Image 1 (cartoon, helix red, strand yellow):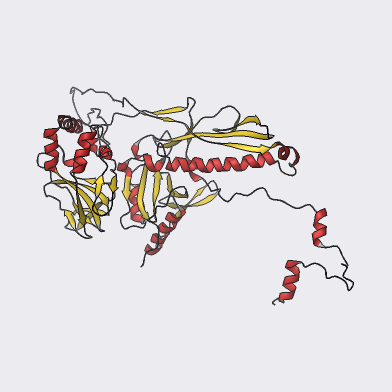
Image 2 (tube, one colour):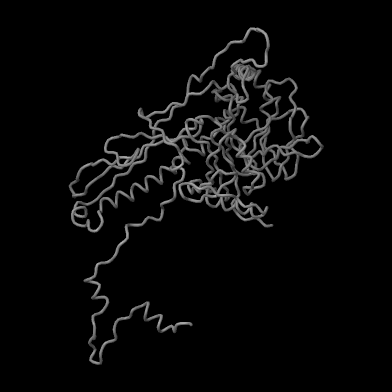
Length: 480
């Protein structure tokens, strides 16, 4: 049975008692009564607090010396990077010369004058959607840098069908792997899936520069010689071993070589100065300690920034330090189960997926279209969505770009598994939480008490395949 609106209004709004005929109240008003009542208060709330799953899932290693060195086997195969471009409008697109060293064949080459000349010889070329840039089996006559657009690598399958083998997107390169080959041929065909712009450099220009610049010729020859050294499938210097032999053959000998300049991670920090007036700290501490509440919310803000740095910092953050060989692009735009399987297959023992909540929603939409129901994983009593048994943790620190795309990160974690680890130092003076201390800085002339709040941390990727990224993940809805 419905309740009359007048009854609802009297119960909720609690209007003041109506005055008597002479204008005087006949009972105590609620406004006056509240002056004698004790209110029930909540602690100060903070909307910006997130689940911070990255901080919770990373194994943290205590770095007593403030620096962590990652020793690795000697790497012979040069890693790939991505070049950058300068666009001045229209067809005036140029590659930034210094970024040409991201190409494997130019890694470590430092003659800026030669790099600038090479950058000036690239030619801008527009490619329409559906256009085939080159086909498998054709001679390699040009090298390409992708300014923007999406290309598909494909080859003829065993039974004559078209087999998709990869996606090429912004900043990627094609053709530089032909250096050192007498008659290089394209191993796969490449087709533009969207309208695109590339920069092309004829190999004849490369030969010209090798003749003109002895330093470039020597660098490229050294690169070819290094690539011809024995190496394992991961590009590390090979250790000779024999198997399946009989009798008493002479066994080959060798050793495990190490990198001579291993990377070192110094602990970074996030700091702030918390100020509390002494009068507030002295008088207004019932029922809650004002200083403790100020400190609690300050630490929450520092931890939020700490997780942001672990994802976005250019020196050690995941988005900028994951090897480019461990990056793939979504095939159709939205993150599909196929994309997630491809990302999962790139490493052993993947333990963590990290994605923006909107990227998780986009992935679930693709699962719904296929009639798939992703599983869940129980993590400390929380039911977390999972794919192939690997939990997908929401992480709002992963940015969303202007074109409404994002990334999904996959991690193998732990020192024992040569994964990704968090770095901090415990036992620091006046420690408040592990790796975080609060130091009293004194009282100034305005009677304000100052506390220095500092968190020390960093992140290390022990081997390149410990982390991978699914890039260019489209978040918006698409028409069926």
